[in-house]
Length: 147
Picture 1 (cartoon, one colour):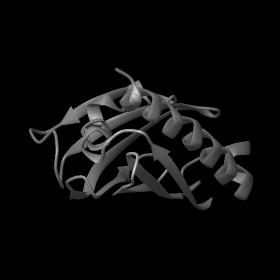
Picture 2 (tube, rainbow, N blue to C red):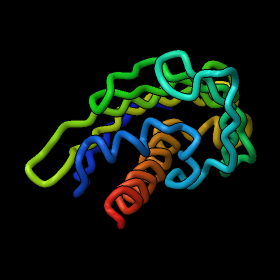
Picture 3 (cartoon, rainbow, N blue to C red):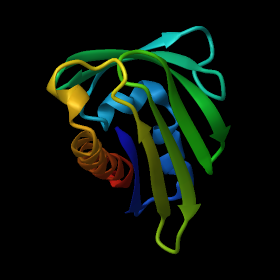
């Protein structure tokens, strides 16, 4: 499909944003399409931690095994799918600002493994994923900016 970049300013310090963002088991609280996260192995955080991620997509349910491939506390966090019908890499970068945190997401998504109309949508599908992630980052911001 393609790549995209999104930036979001969050009125909360990097540590608070990091605590929610890097806790993969909390992802369903702010990522709308994720219906379930299952820990695979013993590591819950850090590079190498693996999870089964179940998402509800327009073409049906998608199950990916994802791995934390980059983990620099309060700076960088990357999730990479290792198996599943929708290969992706989400690279998150956090930077402190005068009022909180700037979060930048770099997304790389593939249609490999999808069938039907979603497999043929190409850049439109990338745009749909980007819009969905924009909404997810807004939900993340609301979660960490709240009381």
